[in-house]
Structure formats: C-alpha cells, structure tokens
Image (cartoon, rainbow, N blue to C red):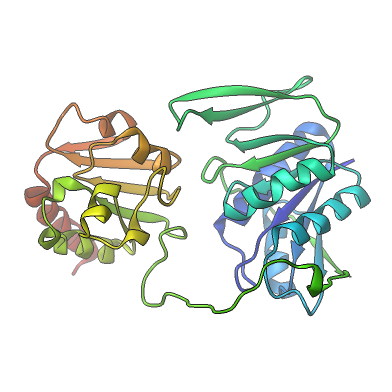
Length: 323
C-alpha cells in the first residue's frame, strides 16, 4: 500500500505547486503509516527530479518515452492508473489545477475510486476517511467521507506548507508504451508569452476593478506590480469594458488563481470574483466602501480612493527597495 503522487512538469521543470503536493503527500503518508511514491511523466533531468526528494519523496519514478510531447488527459490517466495498480496505491494525489481536474475524474472511473477534489487540509479522520474542502465558491466548507478502497484527492493550491527535509529521493527511470495514434490532442501551434509574469504562475498578483474608474488610471498599478515582481489582473467588468485584456480576468468565469499575495484595488468583491481568488494566502483590499464584501475576505484592508492610495503605496515600495 502506498500514496502515489503525480507531479506535473513545465518544460522539464517543477514549480512550487509540485513541491507543495509532495510535502502534503509526505504528511499524509506519515498519517497513514505508509510510503509515498512520486510519479513524473515525460522527459525531466535527474537533477530536477532529485529536488522532489528534499520535500519528502523517497521513491521517484520517471516514466519516459521519446514520443511524449503533448499532454493528453486520457493517455496520462491511463499511465497513472497503471502505476497506481503496480504500486498498490490506495490514495492517488494530484494538484487541483487544470491538469489535475482533467485527469482525476478519469482516474476515478478507471480505479473505481472515490474522488475528493480541492481538499485543503489533511484528512480529519482516516476511519471513516474524511477530507475537508471548501464549497459554494469558498463561502462554506464540507467534510467529505470517501468510502471506496482507492481514493483520488486533488490538493487546492496554497493549502499546504512547503516543508524541506534532509531526505534524498531515489530516482528510477521506467520506459513506458506511448502510441501517438491513440492520443486525441493535437498541438498545431505554440505561442509563449514573454517579458511578462504569467498570471497563473505568479506568487504576487496586483488586480484592479471598476474602482480604478478609467483605462487611463492603470499606470500606478502596473508600476506597483513591476516593483513587486507581480502579475497584473482585473475583475470581469474591467475586461468587459476593454480597460484590460481578457486574459487578465480573474474570477469564477475567468482564471482561478492562488497566489501568496493578492492585492485587490477598487474591487468590491462580488461572489463570482472571490470564487477565483479565495485560495490566495493573503488578500489586501483597497476600496472606498468600508462595507465592500472584499474586506470580509481580506486579511488587510485600506479604506480609501485608489487614485490617492496607489501613488503613496508605490513610493513606499520604492523607499523599501531603495529606488
């Protein structure tokens, strides 16, 4: 019996999300008195795979095939299901991101496993197996009991501390079968954004809403983001008005993000918006309305006009950085 953890790589590199997943898995395995097995699919250098060992991975399986050059949910779920059976994994752990959401339901069917999506704590109980998750766009929580022999869990981002250990993982490379003809996904063109921090990867996000009043008022906000090494984002009304590009729209109908720090400027905090950012570790809100819903979700708040607060905030960050 083991806990199998699937870690995604981005162009052969792992991100904080992967290390968070391994740290959580290590604590879960300790709780269940079993071991963790970490699975990586695709070409990743051993030096990169060994980094997983620092977060508790004892055994690391690198499943490779020279023809693996595109993510396909059906194909990946088949590979992971195969290793789950091989390792007698009773729990399969994935990230609750786009990839995890594409794989987890398929794995649930293949392994006849119960699925706990978006869990944000270690199990409250192992008998019965009970996990904690937020529901209704983060406005409530649920204690979900999973009764199946095999269980699939997807971990919400920023819900587990990244813990470094003295452990060193052992990497085993396993060649796997991969028939490109069975893969339904086809990549015709790849366009990569350069010179800008990707919103979904950012540790810090500076976001603006209708309280910014005009498309001409975004200069100080963009400057603040640059000083903090942050990505920029916006609420849906802003992107609908054309003040900011649609790829910056966060919320229930936009991008779901979970940065360490989310600075919301002139955003009231409608339920649909908070659904996309509620997993942020810290939220700082700036708004003229002291009763704005965003303050209920924020750890820190400034009641004031963004046009007056932002320039002062920019100057304060410059002073701290000595610029």
